[in-house]
Length: 90
Image: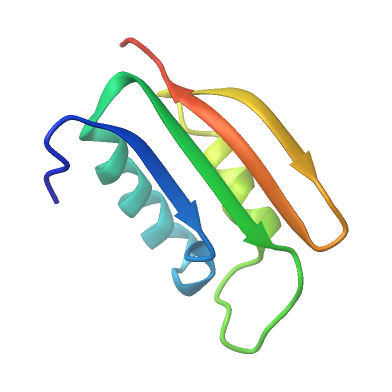
């Protein structure tokens, strides 16, 4: 996927539908196409559902481990988590 120098990526209510390893591959691919300084937002529900392959906590934990992202802010509520990152200049 070529984002042509995108500067914003929003990952909202999507990570649940990927196995952890597939989520890491997808996120890595998306990040490679972001410009340095780009903003990444992620928001996911923290509940359980039969069709979810991973939890909202797991999704955000994997995003926190991305070496090209600097976590700027975040909030965890009873039912969802919202985080903001900036792509590092690497």
